[in-house]
Amino acid sequence: MGTRILLFTGKGGVGKTTCAAATALRAARDGQRTLIISTDPAHSLSDAFDIPLGPEPADVCANLRAQEVDLYYSMKKYWGNIRDLMLLMFKWQGIDEVAAEELAALPGMGEASAMLWLDMYFREDTYDLIVLDSAPTGETLTFLTLPQATEWWLTRAFPFQKFAFHTFGAAIRKTTGIPVDKGYDELRDLFDRLKVVHEVLSNPAVTSVRLVMNPEKMVIREARRAFTYLQLYGYGVDAVIVNRIFPDTGDERIGWDKYLNAQRRYLEEIAHSFDPLPRLLIPHQKEEVMGIPLLSAVGDIMYGEGDPTRVLFDEPTLRVTSDGEAYILSLRITLPDANTSVDVHRFGDELVVQLGNQRRHYQLPSFLTYYRLGASVPTNGWLDVRFEPAEAV
Image (cartoon, rainbow, N blue to C red; front, side, top):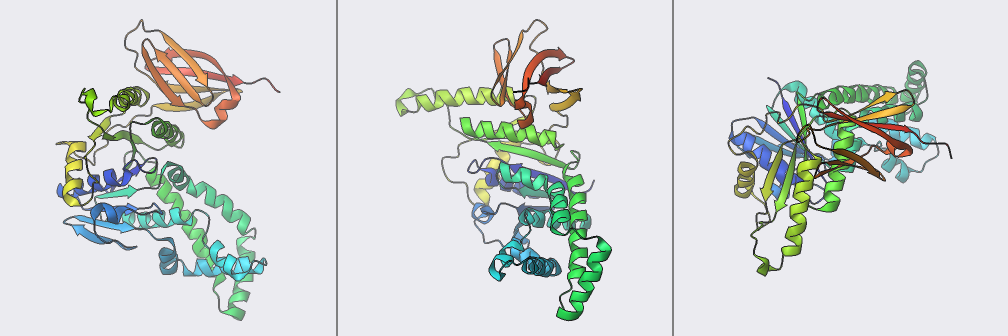
């Protein structure tokens, strides 16, 4: 079957690490050789398991290892020639030594470190499942678009032809002993490997993204934005996880009626706006979830008797196509019945679709905010929304 990859992301503070760790623990308990990697610069994986973790994989329990990726450790161990190359190039351009040391960490290199560890594990086929406890959603989108960004960066940081750079680098190596020509080769190899990892991550049969959120307004809004862009970039989102749901007891004496009323609305909004993705619902645990017993309980709540590694949903729900100077935004929508009325409105960067008495919210790609809303046509389970060029100002 090969290695399966699950990537967990969401707004900071929603319990993303808890859900990722609980999933990894559940898979390990089911007999899967599992590795969980934290790519979040603010690591909290060791806190979740309540054990010390470092930049190399460490045993957590049977079938489960965990790792917190560290940029400088990874560069020192695997990419020393690249670091020397960066230092030399920045000093050559007149940048002082302290600034050059800081700049020697390439833009996106923290994300690249995680990708290259992932590349190694995937090629070695050491694990049945790799769980990525990713950074908050904004950084995750940077992580997933890294190969394109770094290719652009490379061509501008080193505008030499390969032959010229090798000639230049060989001369420097003879006079300084610094293997900058080898560093350039390593840098090019690094970006080639990033492209391979990108192909793995964007293959929905191998990699699934799971969006973690709480039933709160700003959290849902950020999750919708991530959902839109993940699909535009071609990544398979197979579930949303709604964490920390307070019990709706109906007892107003506790003084939480205002919050619980809002929670009901937000849970309904999540059900409609992320339809038809499956929703994994986790009630508030009434205590901080730390340690294997509590994580195991959360894993059981999330997956029941099911397999946490299976693909929970494997169809696109959003796509954008061009039609001359216009664009068509297509949304997968199941109408309650054939006579359901469909009304579409735009409010800034948000599209609101009214299906009878149901209201669904979608985050628009940024570029579509510069186009005006046109006709909307439901066809074969999809709603096609046309965006026309706005009149020139």
